Amino acid sequence: MRRKAMFTVGRKKKGVASAMRRRPFQHMVLRRLRELKKIVPDARDADVDLLLRRTADYICILELKVTVLRRLSAIYGV
Image (cartoon, rainbow, N blue to C red; front, side, top):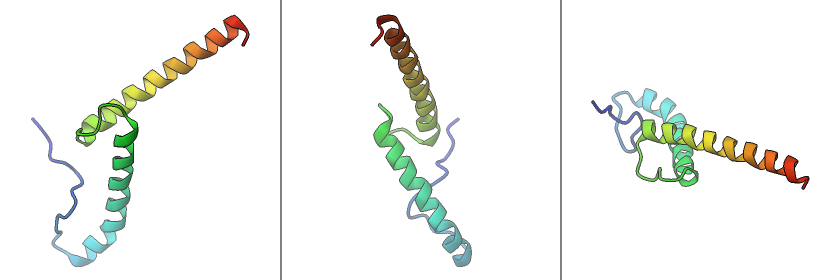
């Protein structure tokens, strides 16, 4: 079962006051998600759940690469 996207652009809310309060936060989150899609490989067309999952995987991969490079540096004394 697929969930609906939590944040959508252009969607009208019922209360004007509540829409005005949420809009800056919503735009901030959308902007950060767009930036994250640019950084994480294979995440350009992913929804929020998949984007966050791929981001977590990418962080693990980067940490592993750093560990390997540190150990190689310690072995070869660079």
